[in-house]
Amino acid sequence: MQSSSRRRGAASALLLLAAAVQVLPAAGFMTTVPTALSALRPPRHAAVRMRSALRSRRGRSASLGGALASRCEAWRGDEDVVIVGAGMAGMACALELKERGIPFTVVEAAQEPGGRVRTDEVDGFLLDHGFQIFLTSYPEAQRLLDYKQLDLQPFYAGADVRFAGAFHRVADPFRAPVDALLSLLPSHPIGSVYDKILIGVLRLQSLVGSIDELYARPDVSIGERLSKDVLFGTAFSPEMVDRFFRPFLGGIFFDNKLRTNAHELDFVFRMLALGENCLPKKGIRAVSDYMASLLPPGSLRLSTPVASIAKDGSSVKLSNGETLKAAAVVVATDGSSARRLLSGVADLGPEAEVKQTTCLYFAIDGDAPSQEPILYLNGDGVEDAEGTTKVNNMCFPSTVSASYAPAGQSLASVSLIGIPAQTDEEVAADVKKQLAEWFGPSVNEWRLLRTYRIPYCQPNQETPSSREKAVECAPYVYVAGDHRETASLQGALRSGTRCGQAVSAALSPMLLQRSRGVVEEFAKSKGIDIAVPAFEPEKTEA
Image 1 (cartoon, rainbow, N blue to C red):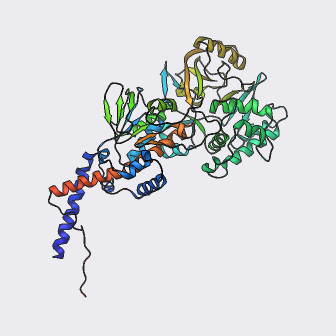
Image 2: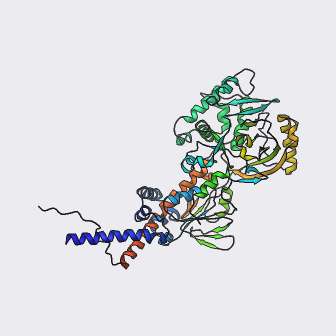
Image 3: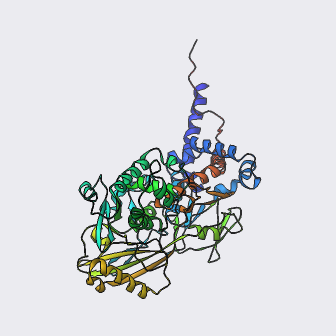
């Protein structure tokens, strides 16, 4: 009798295994046996997050967390999560959902994925959408990307600062010690010896503690930190701030006045200390192309703009009139677009003035004026450069990676802070006039390839600001993007990952109910009593 029961239980287990493999894919689950079987019960970490989320929502309005606790909308388990936007945040969210076996559809208004991380090819030149450097030390980038596939080409670890008619080198003492020592000479005008020591202190401070602890430090602006208190009340000289930090950090945060939160200064210095500044061989788009290649076939719809989102996250209406049903909706766009799409659905709060930039690309016949893969900074005063044609920083990308220009030619990239009122031709003429003083009259022969006026290059990070903003903005409606984190590739990727985790926790009850229902229906059709244990221990004779 016991043997017969065990055989029936074993047969039940085998048939349920077949159900998991053959039936669950039709319900939207991935086809591997481990993933399908795991769908029968929520993973432990998801369950823990779910319990934690529900506990944290006690006492809150039923319009948000209470909806999840009080009812189980099982139909959501039959639909895809719809992700609006195929930028870094949207694709990071998609990859997190893919890892958890949750089906999704990504809709993107543009003709290619990437959002702001894109590259155009013009006359054989690679033109990134604005000057963008890839920092190898970003933790989320290290986790999600295969650097070998990106074929990263490094910059020199330092910069040449243009001041008073000459270039003066500022170098990383750990990677270019000889150049760093030369910058200590009394004739070097970019800061004093003490300023150079304080840079070392700033670097060391950025490496102390965890990243979370960096963001727990006092909420002050970069300008206040640098000019008032770097170490026991001592600070950088005004000359060091004006000649180096304003153009250097202005090129990173698009903020020459240094109003950005000092937390971001610590984070960037930490990333610079731990990694390299690079350009991918195929342009910055190699990052987004690689991420898009990891998405399941058919899950990404390009040239698909969104018109509106249902208040309960149950659907997305496309601009062409089509409606997509949704288990949940993730809005993974820039902050301005997210506020527009979520108007009437959720309140993301007021948006502070966003950062803008203008990037010009010039073709050069023959070699660039310098063959060093280095960044050039304007140390002649850029505090009031925003919205003007004054050059903030520039480089020759083809000296970093020859792939950025066709054979026999070179590429120049020039960045301005803000967007000037002049025409592209007038801006190019003003820029070439400045750079002719830097590199000589041959600059007049440079040919303008394209001007990118970028009205939203970064969200505002001025004080007060917080690193982690909520990704759930209404029941089954989520928002991701660097405006929910730090304004960087790291921030965009991390916000997308957090969003994917939050969606998974919210949908776990529905997916569990759906998977149980599928297996129970299959078992019933085969006459299998799933209440019978699959295996029983042998009873030993007394």
